Image (cartoon, rainbow over all chains, first blue to last red):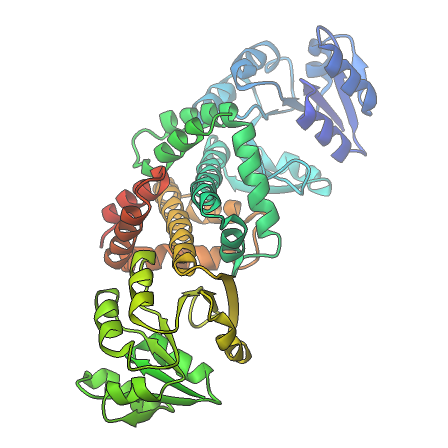
Length: 244
Length: 244
């Protein structure tokens, strides 16, 4: 089976490694130096352009940026006759738009860290065609509805960001009282054994990537605007204050 | 060793069961029917009044309500010549006041669920005198400073309440999208195996006891008023909205 990638960032690279027994195809046309380096390091076959990639893929994966998602679908969605996946962290509205631009679209989201047993969430009626990927990555069918996978990713994102914000608020106070380690040990009671390590990396990661996380959260808040979002908004506020 | 209880609610009852090889003393004077029933069910010896309890205790435990904590310390703190513990969920200011009313006070807080391996946090210079309790309950010395144990309890309380509020916000949205179970499964990725069960009980418990939790949080927000409390305040707001 041929799996084509439009865009070859870290996520595409990791996936191409996971799908090791399949034929990986991509193109280096107009790509950055870093991307070409990454492609060369991988097991991907390099085609002359993305038209060729789209034409030859049984599964075509768009993994670029949310801003480019629709443009890519417009350009290549119809050339491709296989399954079209978008891993650009798009919102459910965009998923529905792309569904209209491609013959066999499946709404998808990678949940969890790409390096630590991520799960590929899928929604849409063509799910069965991706069962083959279960050999390589844990896939979960959510429903037949385009948008559900991306909605779940957003809700998970609210939860994990709020958790990080709660950790930042309480450890900041504890730190000024010289009780930070004691607090983390206290929170770890009844949690799994990696809790302290995970919490420290959550805090660090949130502070380090606050700009991106802020933008993601703004997008999510816009999308769910009809719901009560007290916690999401406070988290946005907290992340903004912790901009490094 | 004699361990005396002033107040015999659920916490005192559970502790008296844990401290099974020690002599438990209390009084039923002016106690409610329910409390007397609980005392009779326990292994406690019943003395004629709390003066007697205070006089005879090597460890005197005040476990009543935050409102009565100081009054009890004023009345019995000086009669008692042993260690004085206050398990009334008091704030650190109150802990310092009680320290001035009793000769051998240790700031203490029960962290975690009283039924599931709770930990007894202690701060204050008399900690060594309570090492004997390690036979029965996991004790942790935080520092020699009165107030630190109760501060930690408050910070933990902010964290767990914020977590519950984040769960309520995201599962409420998911519920209206018919994705509640899917969301909980999604959040459970990389969490321990009891995550879904624990989360459901967190949500239920927070909604059921929203009045008490709201009051606790108001008290905490007042205490830490000089810090950034965006998350704590949003949580207060969320809990208030979910008042049943």
